[in-house]
Length: 331
Image 1 (cartoon, helix red, strand yellow):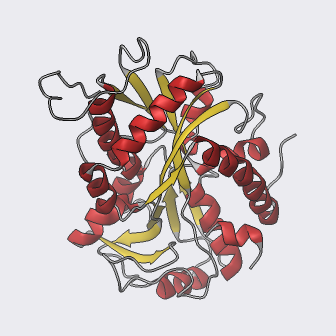
Image 2 (image 1 turned 30 degrees about the vertical axis):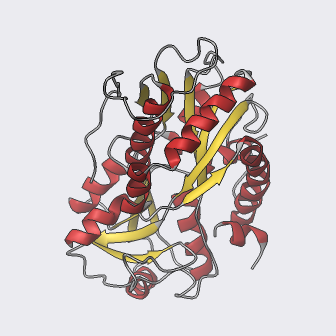
C-alpha cells in the first residue's frame, strides 16, 4: 500500500444563529474574555448545506461555545465547491476573530486543482482540529443491490450505469470513489451536488443509484430507507457491525478526513488562543459528544500548531493522490 492509498485511509432544523441570555448562562462556568473581545457574535462558515452531518455537529459545538464565550456563535452555510468556500472567503474577511470557518480535506487539493493566489497553510490561522468523518456508500432501501459485492458485480456487467452522488467534484467522496473504481477496474458515473441535502432526496427519488457521503445517512439506514454497503473506516462501526469496511472487501484503504476550525490570516494570536480554548472546552461537553455519536464520529483533536502541521502534510499527500489518479495539475 503506497502513501497515497494509506491516506485515503436527518437532519436537525437549520437555525440562523444561537443567542444565550445571561440568565440562561448561569451555572455554565466562567466566560472566557480578553480585553473587550469578544463583544459581539462570532460567525462560523460551514461549506455544506443545513441538515447534513457537518452542519448538525458544528451547530451543536457552536451552541456549547456560545455558553463559554458569552456571545452568540452563528452558523453561516456556504455550500458548494466541495466545502472549500469558507477557506476561500476568509482570504477577504477581516482578521479580527469574528469570522471563522470549517476547513475540510478538499481545501488541501486546491493548489493542485485550481489557480489560487493564496496558500492553504500560510494564509489561514488554524484554531483547532475537531473531528473526522465516518464515510460510507449507500443505496436506497428498495434497491436490488444488497451488498458491496453486488454493487461491484452490477458495475462490471453494466459499465457506467451506476451513478453515485457526492457533495462536489474533487471532494473527498469523489476522489475516494474514483480510486475505488480504479482499483476494482469498474466504471461509475459521478453526479455532483451542492450538498448532501440535495444528494439524499435525489437518491430517495430514484434519480441516482447511490450516494457516497459522511454519516448523514445514519438515520435513513436505521429506518430502512437506505442500505449501507461499505464504510471507509479502519474498523467496523459499533452501530452497524455487519457492514464491512473497505479492507474487509479487499480494498486496502481507509478514509477519515480530519477537519476543524480556522480564521483569516493575521487574526491576533491571543484571539486565536481564546477561540481554541473555548472550542476545546465545548468539545468536552456531553451534548457535543452525543452529536458525534449520532453520526458515528470521533474526536480528532489537534491544537493550532498540530493542525497547521497536518495541513502541510495533507497538501503533499493529496497532491500525490491526484497525481496517481492521473488528474491534470493546473499551473
